[in-house]
Image (cartoon, rainbow, N blue to C red; front, side):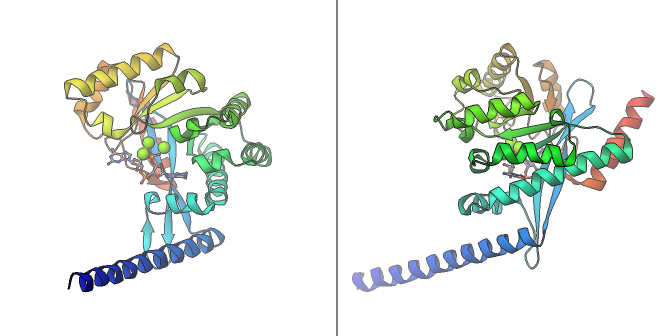
Length: 283
Ligand code: C2E
Ligand code: MG
Ligand code: MG
Ligand code: MG
């Protein structure tokens, strides 16, 4: 009987696995055609100056308008795009789209905001990344110093020195670099000494813990160390006034979070920026 049950479990397991594989394969095909059919959209989340509330830039975050499944958030397809290599094409689309949007805002509204774009480890390490980036700057006549590239620790984990030299090369173009999700991986402080990083983004999970003694010690230690290395701080996932007050008390430069705004479609985002500029002008 135990044997029967074992068999059934195996059967059940394979069924489930087949389902998973099937879903995976379908989604990968969908992703491929989605790239071809341009089913993606960028949303924009303000990066805010803690002290003044000014919007000093934005992060570009991808969304997928799937023809049958509706709006899919990045966590549900970026890993697949990375594993299948499709992230290279998708990432190029993101860069071009973000850059064109920035230029459009500048031309139409005179708003010349820096944009931050997430670049995954696979895309970053790809042999053509630097060349493509240079080409895009040239094609669109874009000032590289208006682009910030967000990478995660996985980019710094590659000890072949390839990624280090790419980072240095893009920095020499004038592009700035942010280390995303700090506090979720190994978060070795040693990286910060070796890699040219302008901005450190402290992950939401860290910021959620600011009220606890250890949480606060960690946040303050990270900030102090970063400042000593001339690195600025963005606190991620700020939702409450109390958190913002805390950020002021620890000299954190920037924040992102629902407290200011969720990521928005381009049109809504630029309206928010204009409103915010009008308010600043009145005070
Ligand atoms: P991330 O780069 O760390 O982006 C921050 C995520 O936190 C975004 O989720 C944002 O919507 C969310 N967030 C911001 N403020 C708050 C808040 O106050 N509360 C809460 N609960 N969440 C907040 P999103 O847009 O779903 O993106 C998830 C991740 O997907 C990003 O994390 C990034 O790793 C990846 N991603 C997004 N767009 C791209 C892209 O174009 N290329 C690549 N390679 N990855 C991307
Ligand atoms: Mg990011
Ligand atoms: Mg992040
Ligand atoms: Mg994140």
